[in-house]
Length: 210
Image (cartoon, rainbow, N blue to C red; front, side, top):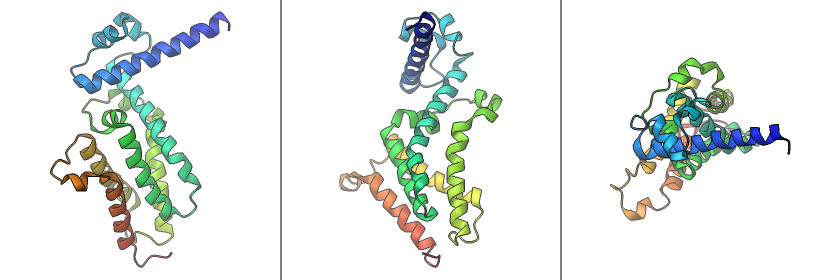
């Protein structure tokens, strides 16, 4: 290994360490209560070192968003090969719920944790991961509509509404807001919710082809 290669690897490892520590602190303390100094203390480096990698705390939060969406897209990637868009849509909903419950901290940071996204406003054109995730849903819904499903519904509004529905299921579970349900119902709740959403889709499209 050359000196340059070793230095580059060390640089990547330290960046990953900064992000991992920041993610933990954002979850433990909240975005607003976490400072660059807190993150620096956690990794036992000076705050100056962190500024060599990120311009500010919001830039770190934005980088974590990118990581989270890149991971989410890995859950969606195999579904691109499902030929029937209606079946693909139902599979996407199930995959989204699975991603959220298997990656609770990332999901919390991406969609629940309250924090400014100034970096996103500045670099929106570069936010490929987030756009890719939503566009995959929009494209699938569009193909469903072309085949006669969800008649009379506007594609982007419908896509956003479907996203909001599964987000509600995920966020309530992640933030442990399901205690109002009996213990019996709580068992396998995400699978039950996915099955109910699938049934709702089928009823909405009872007269559609297929």
